[in-house]
Length: 237
Image (cartoon, rainbow, N blue to C red; front, side, top):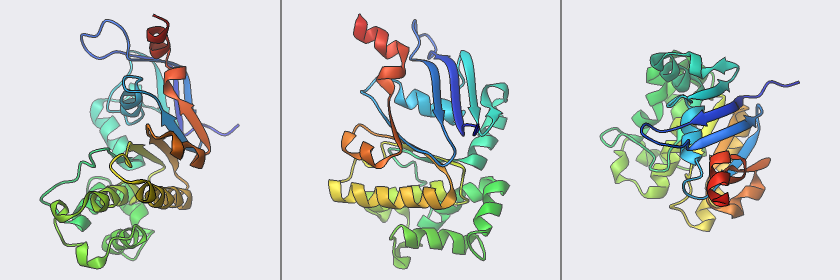
């Protein structure tokens, strides 16, 4: 049997001072190369789930295994290293560094991770070429590459964030509502690019969105409010 790229088992997570858990899961799994659409209303635990996958947070109970590594047994610095080595994040607000150029933003993971740097070098003759290749694929013109990201449109910033997540071909890509600011045509075009790049890299993709129209493009859909026992208990109450 193929080992899951992401496996959360018997999870219970509560924020400090919270009387009841935000997230209680029996099992959440994503296979290697699988592209999964995760939906759910506000408060259903989507951001908490992504924080656990990335090792930003650890559960009070249960096990988080990413690529066979149990994250909750690692120290915080070790989780940080594992995350930058193996997981590419596309944040809803992009989290780009405003005073850096497009190219410098894209190359950030390679500055912090020797593993990502080595994998990026396999994509081009050097790191700069690897970043430029991704930017071309994501339809960002060379005339923009040395600009500060604050000079870009929202759609352009989004594609820079995607290139940063994808450089060095991480085994897992996590996207948190990345298309929420885009119209329908731009949503579809952006998804085409992300899904193609993940497929080329052999990466698993976890894509969180409220927009159910996008779900049919993915291998599988997970409605988090239906598997999160906390959300189910609130509905029953």
